[in-house]
Amino acid sequence: MAFPADTELGVRWLLTAAGQAPSVHNTQPWRFRITGRSIELLADPDRRLRRIDPRGRSMRVSCGAALFNLRIAVRVAGFRPLTRLLPDPSGEQRLLAAVHMSDFGPATPAEQVLYANIDKRRTNREPFEDRRVPPWVLADLRIAASREGANLVLLGERRSADLLDYVVMAEEKLAEDHDYQAELRAWTMSGAHSDGLPSYVMGPRAIGDAALARDFGAQSHRPAERFERRPQIAVLTTPEDRPADWLRAGQALQRVLLLASAHGVSASFLNQPLDLRDMRHRLDPRHRRGHPQMIIRLGYGPPVPRAPRRPSAELRTGAV
Image (tube, rainbow, N blue to C red; front, side, top):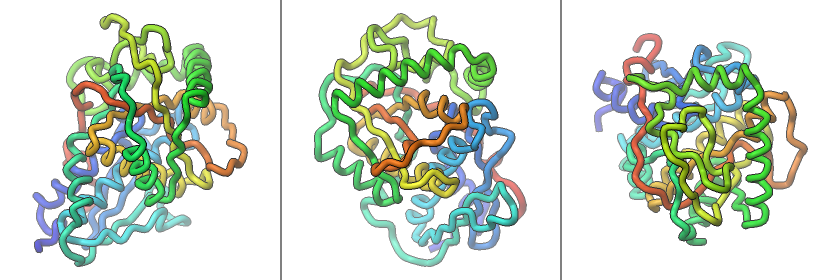
């Protein structure tokens, strides 16, 4: 089988797959460097949200999601992605991971399904149906997270309601932070762009439970709508809370999202409490279920458009 990084078309194919990953406010904070049979993932510091993400946690979670897409594309090409996280801790700080591609064999049917959903996956901020995601699907999603060293904690109705109260309180605090709002506005714009969140992906305001619809400050053109009565909430956690854990969280997140897409399950994020925690430089107390990295709303939503993406040529840095 042809080695994908040997041709410009193959490189473009790999980077296009990687670049379809979700990222905080669609900043797409990643770059890639091709070195022989390896692809290096680098953070793009110009796309880091300085106020919202002072630790760089959300940036690394986003990059971890792109890393997972890259790994799946490498497998579909018939190679094994041997991945090292933070391979040069005393050297280049932007270097987050290195993926060496070695001969292996055809992808499994499960890997083919994940790859097929890279282009289908969407962040869905619309109201979901009231029907529940079945327990067997939720079990599949938990297993998916565990395969990447993370834990997907599925909350019951009472704990979901408590967490949504925290989401509302965090949203109110963030609304009072002028620097946060300015940074948010910089990435929520109308017009032709290849990044950021245009209004057509933001969803409506919510009637009743305001926690289910994040306020991006650009939703006034749409009437408010009623969201699901019993939202299903999951929290993605990692055993520790270090840069390598954030990269693992991103890989786990994307494996969960691609599998959810394959099951027809929609997802959106309610990370305001985590934004507020990071902005205040607070650390979570140790908990047997780990450190929260993402708050995910799961359900069945309508078809939605995809947020824009940067062309693959912009994602590459350095020389072959």
